[in-house]
Length: 325
Length: 286
Image (cartoon, rainbow over all chains, first blue to last red; front, side):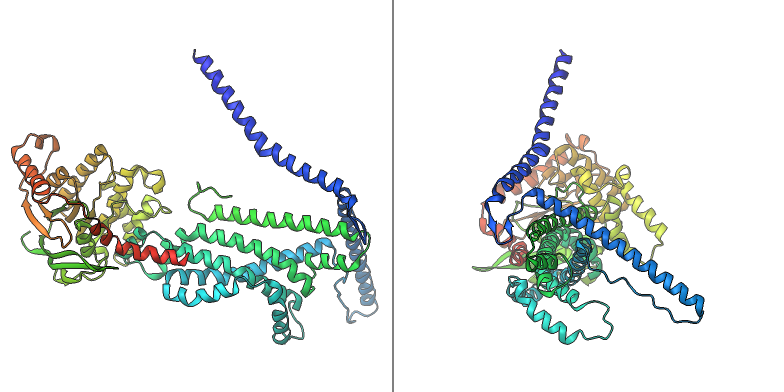
């Protein structure tokens, strides 16, 4: 009797697992494969000035080409440094007091260098935005008058497109950021500021909502304990607001990544945006497949950035049982 | 024992409503001696919690005032620790850390780190929570949470302990258990306690005096009943005790004959007005 029951349970378990497998692994694969098939069959029918629209196969080929380009550049750099070292050694042998030059290899940035530049730019822009948005969000969440003062500005600037900010930022940076030996290139500063200006708002608003929504009971506890302002914020307000805050940070980072590509196109910051723009201007037969590849890489990186923030949220959040998706 | 510790004089409070001010309490007078256990009982919405919140300093009386040890109460403070109905523990802190938050605030500079640690553990021991000292509220049952809430309040060494229906949200068995614990602690520490309840048995069992409140609006103290049952009290022995049953029926008669509840929605509405103001703020931010 009981063994029958156990068997029944086992079968039930098996059934549940199958369902999980189908939903968790099989169906996503079906979706991706269907997309690739559709792309594969539709692409040859789209005739462009640069030839047929690339098929998935050609896009993957371009990946190989870009990796080759990267390896070639690495080799060229190695050769360059070897030569420089040799030359310097010879110079020193002739005259120990000779002045020697140590030059950086000045090669073309490859696709992977551009990914690195983009990541660096987006993260610094996002960092600047967060460092402004979180404290301001906390302050306006705590104080209704302050909120009323700042809210119109938030509502006014939140919908502004990065493309509208960019000319303004470009001109202001060109005028203000003048230096003989600049630590950062202008294009980097411009992209960073544009990203910050656009990704500021979701974090600010969500932090404010989270802070203002702290349970009244907990506020009463804080009042009875007569906690100081700082302890009140650190022990009561921030832990309550963390889930909302991270929702804001996630939206902000998503926006930052989207804005970055546009900003890089126009500011000529040597990242993925510039890569797409250059390929567009280049107009070779490979250009379309390279742009397709860039789009896939941009999407993938955006997805990974979101996951990283999620991981960070699970790490910081006190409620480990909270479901994040 | 005989000197007046806490005194409420002509306390009244009005809440602003869209239809003009609503008078929730009027002319509440109460004198409480040191070490006394006083219960406030009355129908829901009669302003019991409002009285407690005024003593706590969370609400400001419109007329009259509260004096504790010769000083007027006009803001919340740890010398009037509150045990909230829904425990109100910080969900991100363990039982120990929840108690620690208050202890750090009250004994800063007066106790060393080791002394504080000992004091926190001692208070958790008082409420029999030593076994779950490093658990977070979501890992504790309702009764256990309320125990930690009591420990947090006791650890602040309050001059008056204010309890707002502390056992209202618990099942009957857990409630009885906690009542016994509370009597035990009270026996040991001799705190001055004001407790709100709507449970007649609880009031008679725990209190030295029961303050019965009339129905709102403009609620006030109706009758005060002195409970002179000998301590320590045992709920089983008292069940057949004539004196106990006499007190019990006195309270019941007050509640169900003299102050028969006429449901008035206005009262609740006005009581919630202050809460609403805070909620509105949150909403408008959203």
